[in-house]
Length: 257
Image (cartoon, rainbow, N blue to C red):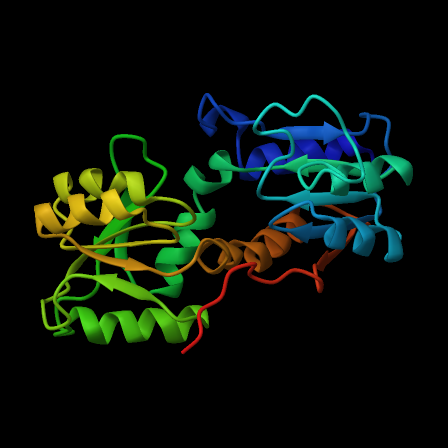
């Protein structure tokens, strides 16, 4: 398959027009003449995932997080921001990223997260429409503590909460990754609980001011839920391409119980 055909499939799944203005999505390394037979799928282009792509003889590394988001001026093997790209370039492997466009897309990061957490009737969270908001279930009386334990079990991680553990949970907003800045938007949309990957101190203080429960469940953990569904979607749209979920990626931050 030509890389142009793969790009067409990805743009069907996650249209670039859904990406936020600051973002850097699409083909970041390679040419449209590139032939694609093997695609490794990961959240990040790191030395580990890039080397895995080399070892597996992949033609392309597909990631959620883009290269060069902060405007890299050089590609060096000793620079943590570009070491993975350096490996890919040396071995002629292309790289494609779908970031905030995959967050916002139907069936993307936040729809997958809503499905994983049992959120019903999930709809885009205004005003940016990246996140989702929906109901935990009218017939499921639940406290913040109980829901946080459920989130931890579903995502396979420890979580942190902001709010009274016995406060009720019914209307839940969520954003995978670093969504703490959207706590006010979650409150404005009528959520009583907000689930995201990362929350800064001042964002937690704002949530407490609004009376909004917050569950911080990890950047990696709240985004990796999209990877297998993305592979399944691509398999349905592309022929003669083999996909593999990375085996070398894990959360870079953990919590000691």
